[in-house]
Image 1 (cartoon, rainbow over the protein chains, first blue to last red):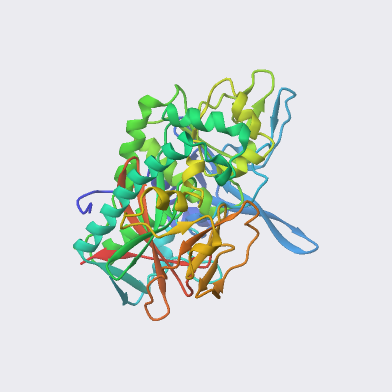
Image 2: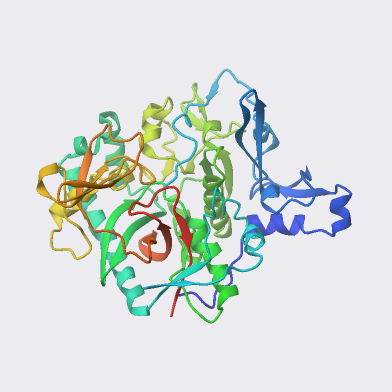
Length: 109
Length: 376
């Protein structure tokens, strides 16, 4: 019901365009320019895994190896600031965080 | 409605990953293009009409619940009731919802309404559309999700508080992140300033009594892929009620009524002649063939199917403490052991398209597969 429409994805296509570089640059460990949000300038981001599919540019899983095996802690997103991506919780006395997000790991609905 | 088996595209994993669709496979494929469902235009028209009318019935039902203060049936926390009513009376912004429908023997029946935190939006709006472009670009699909999301975000702009529209979801789920980023993508295209943060990164400024983002900037408007019943029960829940910014939370709190399965007997009580509704009750003894559903449950958990009083099928889970409802059994159609449920999207006030999830049993759970569709 929309045959004539052209779909654009600004977040995904921005990522895709920035990641779609010649192969030698990937091998050389080239860097990727990624925008953190719609109002922010593009920022430099180290290429995480040369040859990985696009998904891993957009959402990098991260986690910890424990005595019980690997435990995924979450996903980095190129849309988030580095401060958030490294899960830095700089406590400021006036501001508290973590008051939402306790109930489950996914809404799955 | 027919189920047609086909060979998947040779490079289907790469094709969907290039769209940013990263959760196509868990232990087995979630995105499954080894088949598609075909519909006639008449069938699509019926599903579209059902969606339109169900939305109208739902809005009437919300007003009924508020007018008659039926909140205990919905296990809505007492302290949230004035706020819920305020969001309804002031018509706080809302963007979407997904009706789960059973289409069988020419009938469309509402199974439930995911009104607060529906997912599978990206698969329905984008992934299956690009599948169709590869499979048969001359065919059409019941799918204007992308256009309607952009258009409705654009419409909502003048109703939002000045400032950014934040988007929040849990950090542990790629599926949730993808759905949220897709909605944000459409908001950006509508001209909105946006910012993403994880739900646990939302801050509370104790001095100013406002919510803030990671940069300590006030949150004025926020789309959250996180259910109201969870928010209300968590540490920051009460802060919503004292927030000096009166932040717009999308979906708004009145969706607590519609996303609750207690809406099903409420709808039936109000509209017993509706062709889209199944008989549903709060009492167990009104039906012999029925489905017991907790009023608050997710992904097909804790569902019991009974036929002639005997247990036909059940699923595990940890829901049900708040009570259950009983809905007439109307089993999903059977395509050689494959059982599809139609997720019909309402965006703004209009039907916008559909996605089909298919299960090997009668309850659509978190092992279901997403199957594309087309119109013949």
